Amino acid sequence: MNIIITGGSKGMGKAIAEKFAEHHYNIFLCARNENELANTAQEIETKYPNIQVKYFASDLSSKQGAERFGHWILKQKISIDILVNNAGTFIPGSINNEEEGILEKMIATNLYSAYHLTRILLPSMMAKKSGHIFNSCSIASLQAYANGGSYSISKFALMGFSKNLREELKPHGIKVTAILPGAVFTDSWSGTGIDRARIMEVNDIAQLVYVASSLSPQACVEEIVIRPQLGDLP
Image (cartoon, rainbow, N blue to C red; front, side, top):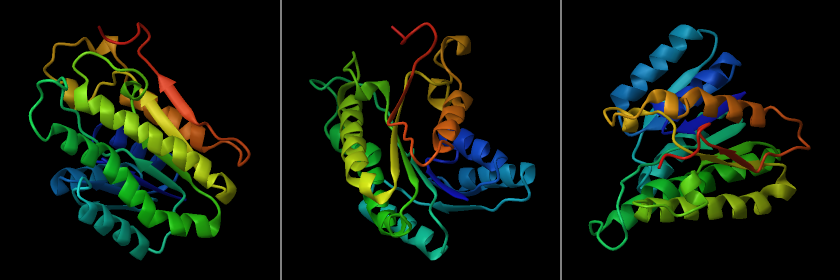
């Protein structure tokens, strides 16, 4: 079995990779930083020597970058069992005063990366009439919040992509799941002073993704909504 994970060098992407490696999946990773990818791949291979871990560095916010990674995957001649569209970025701000170009950057990274990569890989998945696509949305896909700005707009758009893809792929035996987490402790929270006990762990998300992927072919978890026990951060 094979899983493809974008944004896979750290944070939730890395945690998902480790969870599936534990269950004997071959891992195919993509992120922008090749050194971080290499370190992650080596770490997983060392811990799970009986699986294959490969990586390809590319900036998926550009169509060309997404297509390069997609075609690299196709050249591996693998069965695409799971695709996790996890690449993304967060820049806080308000629509009325955020810097020019922020919306375009958020849309390119958080939406177009998933859109263009999925389009490259779908023919292979549709041909075998199976597979599972996970899209890393956010609670920001469900409700606007202060200082969310263009990030929230892009995540609403990714949720729309997930919903449309779900309907489109039902007849083809391919599942689509939107992951909608609240605050999860990743590098972006380092140095903020937030108590780690107040927000979720990346392994919480990884565990849910694995469980959702392991259900019978007749069952599809359409949305995973998970928040910190005490609720969203104020």
